[in-house]
Amino acid sequence: MDNDQILAICDKEVLAKAAQLCGTSKENVKFLDISENIVYEYQRNKLPLIMRISHRKGRDKKQIQAELDWILYLHDHGAPVHLPVPSIRGNLVETVKVRHQDFQVVSFGKLEGKILEDEDVTDEFIPKWGQAVGKLHALTKDYQPLHPDCRRFEWCDEDDIVNLYKYIPVREKLVRSKFRILIEKLKNLPQDRDSYGLIHSDIHYGNFLVKDGKIGIFDFDDSMYSWFMLDIATIWYWALYLPQGDDDKKGYMNNFKNLFLEGYRRENEIDEWWLDKISLFLQYQEMLLFTYMCRIYNLNKLTENQQELLNKYKNRIENDILFFGMME
Image 1 (cartoon, rainbow, N blue to C red):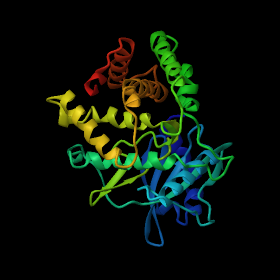
Image 2: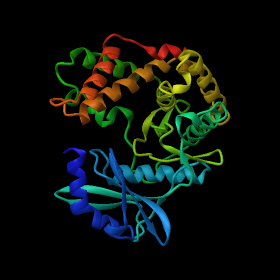
Image 3: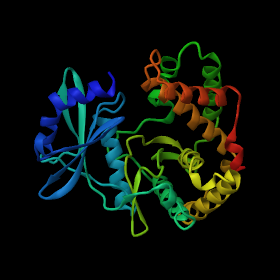
Image 4: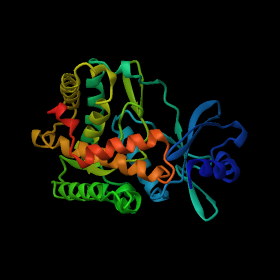
């Protein structure tokens, strides 16, 4: 089902039940967004809250409980994260069953602050971003799941990896081969306490709010067990597209990297050996994006923009065009 179909089912059959569990009504919720989840805003006792309804494959109740357990642990240890709020029944996760499908419902307190614009990513702000990520990595080293049967998935169990050959068409033989080789390289990397653990995996600047210079991180839906370098690489990957460095992209990214690591190392140390592996994780990020596009697009009816985007990624992957050299 595409997002329009999912949203229609949610509006007709899920939302009223979900709203009731959250202490409000369908009429009093405001739709915000749909991507991997459906997101609404509402109020309970005059407090602004966010309702997230999950319909994704691989996001069952135990996976979401594991996500929320980690968020609570991070908050209790001083990390700047977006806290979940119990339902009126006192549960952090509620399940609404419709058409033999489970929809998982979670509420979060609405953070104060603003989503950053491109121009807000300044030399003064970048170390704060690095410090927030470093704190998460330092704290996760000692984390043990609260419920032994609720544990977040490993990076290699992510849907876009497990179903790689389902989503990427058979005709894309070279892309498939490149991805398979990259996954094997990653599997051979060390996984120790100082390099590997539960990570957010998507801390680009659309997934935190800033107020008075302080960061509040949200959207832990993609949290998984992986290398700390994947968190860092994801941030640096999207920083490549910031317009600030258009005149001198290599110079801008070197400055961004140094400022980010300056902040990161205030909370957590990372060995240079791992920083030398940055291109591996940037390639992985790019290949995941290609797989994601293959999954969500109707490949038999691509728009002109979708075709252009797929061709751009395909060309870079097939020809090993690593613009990531701008960070070396």
